[in-house]
Length: 230
Length: 256
Image 1 (cartoon, rainbow over the protein chains, first blue to last red):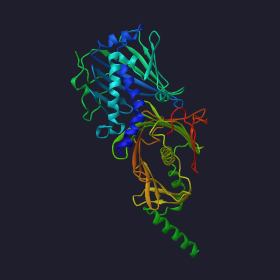
Image 2 (cartoon, helix red, strand yellow):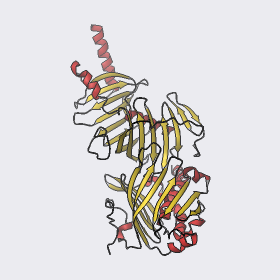
Image 3 (cartoon, helix red, strand yellow):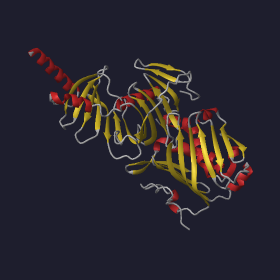
Image 4 (cartoon, chains in turn blue, red):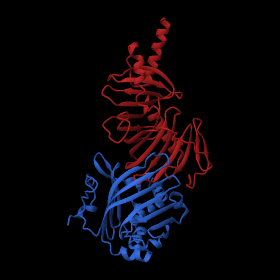
């Protein structure tokens, strides 16, 4: 049974790599329209904390209007991340050092989602960590192309990943340090766009930001409970 | 006349042996209205539902996903998409007598998964196929319409007096699948309380699992039907009910 579970984890690994990779790409600083990989890397080293609200739009051919999800994320260098969906489905991804855990909201509060193969996610962490340091240009999973000022294209190198994700497009704001949106294309008619709001760079975060949940989700939009008010 | 009464008695007795719930007959004047009430659970027309789905995995553990179901009551067709909370599509299939899988990420690429999903969708959203063999009230005063399907399964559609509805399926006298619906206030759909806020599906055979569907939105489909045929050689096709399984190549994603 354990062997079977590992097999499923292995098959999901490219998908998880991609998903987690996107999260960490989002955590990278984006120094504006004249980005290069070297600038990226240099700017990454100046980031200590990041936080933002996000709206995720899921576009599918059969949906008359995109499905919207709202959430918040917090990042603290070098390796703490909280990515939390507040609605319509509450869920939480936490990374603390090498430990990666995922939680879903139930009537009893947040419950760890053991079914997704946390060990597999921990294996992915090494790759992600290099992206976090600004080394994602060397990541074997994606070819990174600076298409034009303010637009970065990530194309999966491996066929297995390319079958799931055709490309990822990052649109940068002209304001240094601010990303406008990330769009993940699964096919011609299916893509996911994440739009960020209220981004705070190097603002102090509450010590509880990366705590394992004890039953209560983060609060509503624009009221980040894990931000320390200066 | 005597022999007819005896025959009816024997039939009722046989029915009672295969289903756990005995039914009290209805007043003839109420029978028509009663049959109408048994249609309450099933959407009329073309609708699109978005549900948050929570499930218990075999061997423990929990999982959550978002399900988009577009269905047409008239043609009994459905298009179902299952995605992660992060928006990645895990499974995309069209059910129109055949199953056409447009996308299936492992471990959702098994034939049994597609078949099981189709069975669940039919069970929840479409009236039972087969004959209406009995109408009556259960011990708890619920209105019940009892159907016998062509494969011998018995399906009870129950409308309890306290609200909501339940559907139970029995095989060989054992309950094998149930769905219970709860209604409540929901502010983000256009169905105005027509559809349940939450449905809990439980299956015991061949595998035991429980799925909870929480309604995110329900929208009527107007204009051009959204359910479209999508036929190409890059699909995984499953013909029902003869269950002739034709494995072609899925678009890019290996089916095994």
